[in-house]
Amino acid sequence: MRILTITCCTLVFVPMSGLSVLANSISEDSNKSVSWTTDAASLTTLVAQNNPELPKTKQTEVSSSWSESDSVDTDKVRNVLQELEQVGNLNFRPNQGAPGITIASPYGFGGDGGRFFVGAGYASDTRFRSLDSDGGMVFGAALGNSRKAVGLELSYTMASFGNNRDFGTGGFNAKVHRMIGNDASVALGFNGFLNLGDDNDFEDSIYGVATKIFRTRENLNSAFSRVAVYVGLGNGQYRTLEAIEDDEDQINVFGSLAFRLGQPVSLITEWTGQDLALGLSVAPFKNIPLTITPALRDVVGGDDSLHFALGIGLGFPF
Image (cartoon, rainbow, N blue to C red):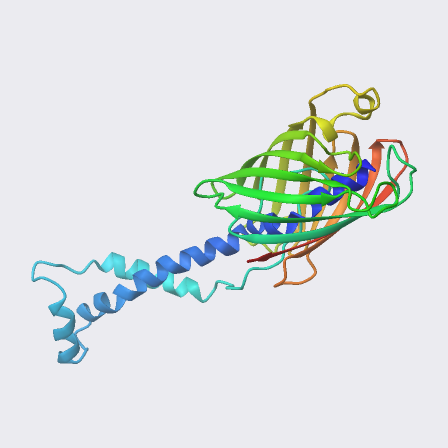
């Protein structure tokens, strides 16, 4: 069952964090446009002062806003004009869906700013149970501001649709995250701090993780334009299979390397702490933060037999 619950807990966070992380260049372009607009507002005044062909009434209006000792900075005029010319080359678009950077493990980025998220996970086989396929869901909200202070995710993970546990069995999770610049973030989380129903595989799991995005190309839509790396430490669900079977406390390493193949698709290779997973994450709609992530689990490690897992997540503001 562990494959399912970890997948469901993690994949549904992708639409928010993937949107803010992998589309950084879009948001930055928008921020730049604000400064360009501010400069453009004063550009009329500067050009008017430097243009003797303007009607006298215009020149009078312009000169009245400047003292006699003010001088025109022609270099500033030139620089602002060049910046305005660049606006036409920018591709201004609304926020887009973005592919994820993880399959089953948590990462340093997260949702904030007031968002709901919902998602579902499916696993063809489940560990430590009957090895039947099963599914789960997660519901949550993202609050705060990870750039100015911290972001907070609160969620409830339903660990089973009833195949391996009573329907609705699950636990509450919390994650606090903080961005460092535009391309890095750290997070601390506590999965299953309060649990309902039968035992689940993620209860009392505490972790810390750091994530860094490398911009290999300026254009976000170029192939391999972004590379995401994260490394984390955790106990509980992140222990090795041997430690879980022997009921031993352990702090274990997990991590991932993800490549953005193109605007809507990323390739992910991940060590969950128990097995190597390989998957693709797809954002099929440009303006909808929906992410679909099919993956193979137990490529290396685990119980030495491949399992298919699928996660679907959607985030939206409130």
